[in-house]
Image (cartoon, rainbow, N blue to C red):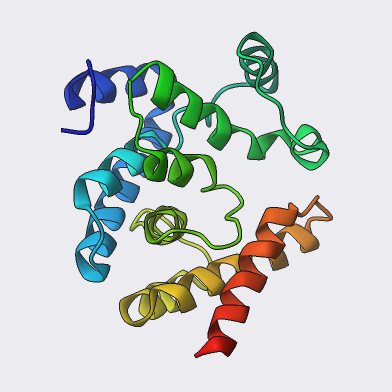
Length: 195
C-alpha cells in the first residue's frame, strides 16, 4: 500500500475536515475519472487514486492560510504563482501528502503539485490527474463533452485540449498564465511532431 501511517479512511476523514462538501464531491469524481483513465491507459490505479484523493487538499485554504503554510514550511514559489495564489494549492497539497500522510512516491507528489499548471514532459500519471480534474462527471462547462470524447481516444490529445481550454479561459479573464502551462502545451505539440 502506498500510504504510510494513515489508512485511506483516515485521509478521507481529514480531507472532509479541510474542504467544502462541494469540493469533496468533486474529489470523489476526480478519483473515479482518474481510475478510469489509469485502467484505460495502463497506469497504476492505486497511484491514480491517491493523487486524485489529495490533489485539492489545500484548495479551500484562504490566501492567508496558503501563505502561512508556505512560510512555516519554507516553500518557495515563482513570481507568477506568488501573484496568482489559486495556483499554489497543488504545491501545498503535495507537501502535505508527503509530510503529513507519508507519501514518498515522487510520481504521485508531482501529479498533485502540477495538476494546476501542468509542466513540460509530464508523466502519464500527471496527465491523468490533470485531465481527470477537467472531465470528472460533476464538471459542466462548454466543451467538457468534447474533451471527454477525446479522452476516450487519446490521452495526450485530451490533455492538450484541456490546456488549450485553460489558456483561452485565463486570457479571457485577463489572468496570469503560468509558464509551466505554456511549456506543457509546447512539450505535447513537440512530441506530436516527433511521430
